[in-house]
Image 1 (cartoon, rainbow, N blue to C red):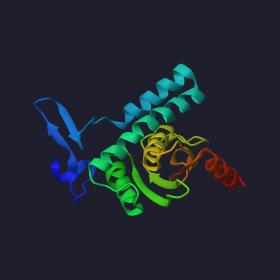
Image 2 (cartoon, rainbow, N blue to C red; image 1 turned 45 degrees about the horizontal axis):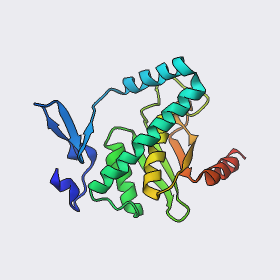
Image 3 (cartoon, helix red, strand yellow; image 1 turned 180 degrees about the vertical axis):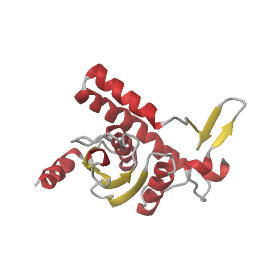
Length: 190
């Protein structure tokens, strides 16, 4: 594990340590859990059944935001410079993609405006046999928003512009200050 804290950066998979005796998996000093994606779908479905789709969406997003900041702390422990666009791309690839969240790439990042545009395919909330009319990646978008908040040091919001869950070729979100995201959403609608 010490090599993950040096300048040699490793992805989540390469940094995993399994303690079979204790039944614990760790990486970057954090405990991980290996679960099937179907469990995420079950949680999403149960939330919708219990509180309705609108509130469930909000819960998924807010829970994701809380968890997203942990990814940035792990990245910092692994030696990534969160103020460097190349390293932010590596964080997406190593902690996002190799962590099983889907194929994640940074499309654009503006440190001055505190905005980032991310694209991913095969996200955990996308169901191959179920297509809807609206984006479905609320939990994952929340994780990305929380990670971006920790990276930029301020409260942010996001909007998912395209989603494989509604038949698009990929999922894409813009994350930034609420007023900037609102302007971006208005422009994208036109």
